[in-house]
Amino acid sequence: MSEQLRYSDAELEEFRQIILAKLETATALYEELCSSLRNNEGNDIADTSPTFKTLEEGASTLEREANARLAERQRQFIGHLRKALERIDNKTYGICRATGKLIPKERLRAVPHATLCVEEKDKPNH
Image (tube, rainbow, N blue to C red):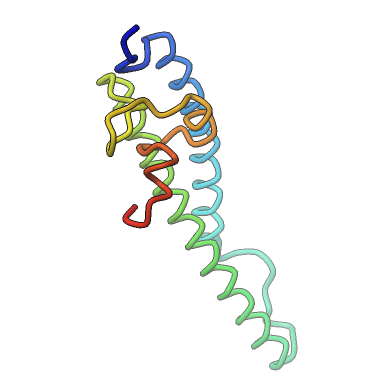
């Protein structure tokens, strides 16, 4: 019996549905984070003492920076998911870019944008 070179169309469709669900969730979170970064309204600190005002401004800045980092990570994740959908469309999805062998389904279900099998990912040069 020969080794399977790619996933079947039915299997690719299963992965497409997994990715679309993750993409929907990731996009919603990204939009929420971006909205919080744009939001200049909310609780004002004008009526607090100067000491507390400084502390609150510092905490607010740290929170905005953390949200900006999270938003950037979400944006990158969304990009990886979209590229995975492209690989499904051209039927190269699930093929390890280092070995050319199929990435196990269990890994793809857990990390649907994976392009490397676990063995290759764990190597120091990746």
